[in-house]
Length: 278
Ligand code: AMP
Image 1: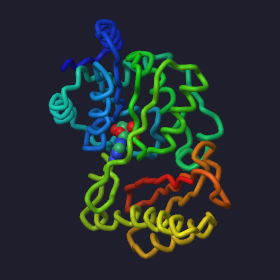
Image 2: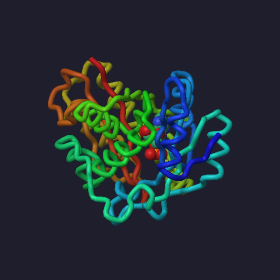
Image 3: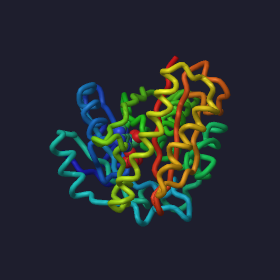
């Protein structure tokens, strides 16, 4: 497995690759969720490139950029075991040299949900993914359903800017109790970790109501909030039932709906989602 730090070296390595190339962009501190993306890429392509880059431009000034967990050596060992061909791990100065000032904005959908709470977040995500796609030139890039709005934004950017790659969305990988795997779960103390299962309970509540014939989105949001409010350590950021493409809140679920939520436990903010299909 090659460990590549510069854009020039990554482009040179890419030029040597024959056949289809799959790409898995990450911020590192890998877990099983990331590895499932890697395995999907390995299955569907001749080569797999992963990237590890804690992207400063997608963090707000008061967010956890500095505290974000990092362990590149452990990540390399995990990726080596998965037989990844190359890991691209640039420094911030390599990706954003002095004078960098071109940004990718994906419009309205970036102002809702996570975008409403984290202004500028998706501009950072869209810009770094565009750069990474240009550097790695993959045939396919793999993203987790865990970050549903990120998926929606990236699919839109790829479509709107006529990029030559396919976006593959991989279902969320969960712990045994239902908590979605996330690099940020390490922030949780043991009590918060136990309490965090409430996200999955709230999503399951929505799923059961929908399966039982409930299509009133407000009632579903209300029941989810009631479920979460039973957990004293949980502080709700938002609970949403929205159109899967426009991310506009729905009154009646009469098409595919993204049920998503953000909940804080102390300083740790967790997100999760499910899709209700017609
Ligand atoms: P991150 O390192 O958190 O930026 O995540 C890198 C990629 O892994 C993104 O496409 C995430 O959506 C995906 N990912 C993170 N956690 C999970 C999970 N539990 N299941 C599936 N994909 C995930």
